[in-house]
Image (cartoon, rainbow, N blue to C red; front, top):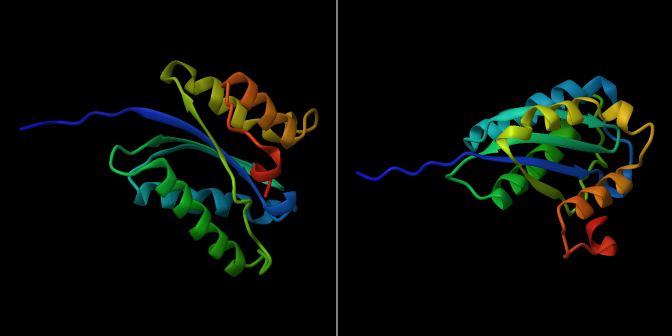
Length: 151
């Protein structure tokens, strides 16, 4: 009998369409819990989730049974529908089309968890666009095209 083993950690981030501040404090915790539930459904454990008004960061362990693209599709599709229905949400809510997903070494989990937990402080100094461009540089991403990513 064979066995497949996998331990892949992903730092996922994406924003609201046109960076509109849809994620209000009143619903943040509920949104984070909802996303954790979607991840659980796809056998991917949420480690930490945090957001500011116009974007979200999710650190999770990627299941060996589902692709990253499928999980991101389900997170964005389901949470978009949920944000339109929840009290305090908006019928106009939508996520940007693009997203950033970055691999995380198990030795860096605490560093990334702390980074995600401190988003509010972090964004007093740097914009979301600057943050993404910093990731692009750090991870040597060559496919980035700003006119498509920010849609």
